[in-house]
Image (cartoon, rainbow, N blue to C red):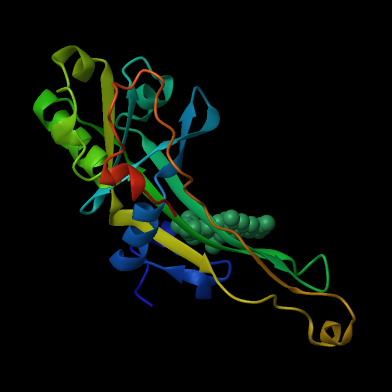
Length: 215
Ligand SMILES: Cc1cc2nc3c(=O)[nH]c(=O)nc-3n(C[C@H](O)[C@H](O)[C@H](O)COP(=O)(O)OP(=O)(O)OC[C@H]3O[C@@H](n4cnc5c(N)ncnc54)[C@H](O)[C@@H]3O)c2cc1C
């Protein structure tokens, strides 16, 4: 196990589940675009769900230039989490029920990307990461759209991962009880795409649609 990058990112509770290496952290961030951004606005903590994407050792998120969340996060301390649930863990006591999960927590100061060309590059990276080959077939992004979009970045310098993976951990004496225990695996499934009613005739879904997967 690699060392925590800082004291505040060190997993203390069940530290055996903590990981800090780039491969693990990147793997979780790349597998799940949904994140929760934690920040404080006028003394109240908010946790806002949104989409993130990773490029090298930074994550990015974006939205309307009028977004309070984005505006508040500029140059502010934030905490971003990404979570995936892999199974419900059924134990022989209520206390020992759990779930198998993979999660990442990133802390640091968010920064704004102002330059329109840079913003466009990141939007391309975001689109291509989810749907390889889509950017070039799209109607090009306009200056007005770039202006209407606020984009933030966050370094992965202070990131931790926590992973639970395994069977229930019951108290030794409880294994003698006639109670079913085990895992209920959970996965995020992509279903068949549905075409928009206003698609031009003869269009079929490209490979980045039919092969799309998450989780
Ligand atoms: C789907 C899911 C369900 C969970 N259910 C429960 C539950 O029911 N009860 C419960 O107590 N805990 C649950 N956890 C674990 C929970 O996220 C915390 O790790 C745990 O509560 C310990 O919190 P703490 O503040 O004491 O951690 P500490 O170990 O004190 O946190 C120190 C540092 O460790 C890192 N860290 C802590 N937790 C995580 C994490 N999950 N992912 C990445 N880095 C982390 C952060 O950098 C944090 O600053 C769940 C996690 C997931 C993903």
